[in-house]
Image 1 (spheres, one colour):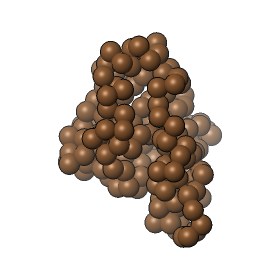
Image 2 (spheres, helix red, strand yellow):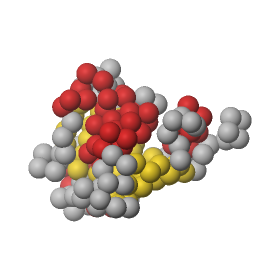
Image 3 (cartoon, helix red, strand yellow):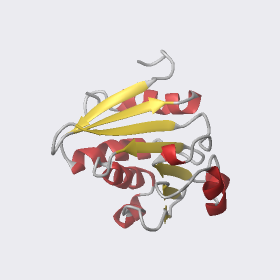
Image 4 (spheres, one colour):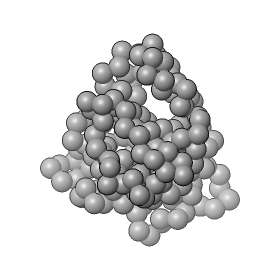
Amino acid sequence: MQGQGPVASIVFESGSPEETETVGAALGRLLVAGDIVALSGELGGGKTCFVRGVVAGASPAAAAMVASPTFAILNEYPGTVPVLHYDCYRLRGADDAQELGLLDHLGGSCICLLEWPERIPGVIPDDHLAIGFQWLDEEKRRITLRARGERSGQILSILRNDNKKSLVS
């Protein structure tokens, strides 16, 4: 894959929460300040496990702090580059996102993880990583990572190259 440009998408199949966290951790090691990850999928689809992995990769000391932000809307995980984990389910659009300060964080000095991004249409910058979680059965999940721009395409290219044998199905 090297030298072939950005990768548009990668699909993983996870058979356990630990596998989902492993995929998240591999991604987390690649994320830098300004990166935005939008997480979509049904309740129980693996989003929080994935976020726990991302935080473990991006800010290992904060990994044990990860919980679903459903009632808090925002969980912040400290580190060299802070990770902000928003649950947008209860937001009603751009005005709510603005009131929370979410717009000030996008593309800034932190990594932003956004659950339920469909609740804030038009708010997320064009270049972001879109991740979908789909139930396959009680234990299995399909995790689809899609690049939505140049930077997110670069992230997926590195992820695929670094994990050809261990993660990519």
